[in-house]
Length: 364
Image 1 (tube, rainbow, N blue to C red):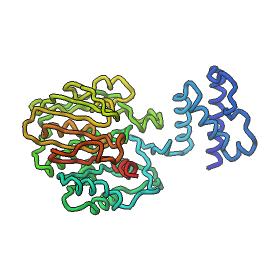
Image 2: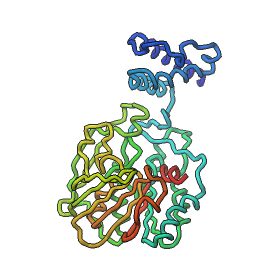
Image 3: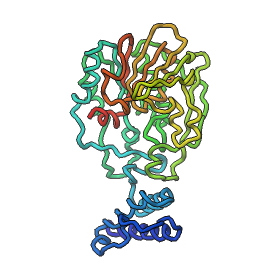
Image 4: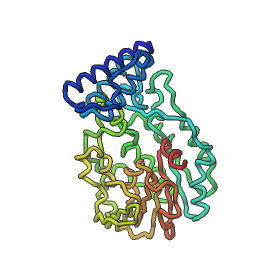
């Protein structure tokens, strides 16, 4: 079977090259182009692999060729493309278990922050859809386990850090639309139910689901897993906005880049211009920046410091109804340098919210 797969892939690659030549997209001779295969390179598949890489880097209609390749892989029995498992109704990322730190090392950054600052600290590790929907994975799929891993990390946190069990919340809701079909991240629905649990731990009463008016901002969102596979058979996603008409009003939003330069974004939390781009998920907090400071008309003196990856972007609109100020630090841009990324003085709560699949990459 493996040999047949190589032959199929080789045939489709050769066809792609001829199409490219006919279309005139290979405009000049390039010494890096693997145009002259050897018998050995054909047999062991290295020529096909080199040619695929070349096409991805050089050919003008790469998306079309890559989509042909992905569909061919599926046709010959492959269930994974570019580290993404293809299922009937959603794309799921492969979870790797190589070179992961010990649970104590994974908990260490949060422990050190709490011990240094004394700020009441809350910790949320969000499991991947691949963990929640394990039963959808192909038979014999190799996928790292996250449920126990998250619990092990939580057990290594020091007294005073409050951990939120997102896994059990999301697992109990897995029949709902809590993760995107074409993206690694959770939907507003999934985020809301974890917010509901977390905000109670933080001493507030959550805004009830019934108070939100839900608007579909886009019904054609195709996320980062689609970009990896260009697999069109899985239905596009819906980007929702949850609007609480009687809740807090945003008074200012200021973004800071890596050099500390400030950009005044007025009182707009959402970026509607993102809905017409290939990065529709940026609708929730706008263009990524190193630090984002949001102020509201809630005069309760409560200030929240958030350390996050992009999973937190659709959670922030729920949190603004409880705080006068929220300072958001993007760990994907700053890394774990907490001492310089923000002045922690005056904050009443701190929240670490990150996807499990990203957390251990960020701390290394």
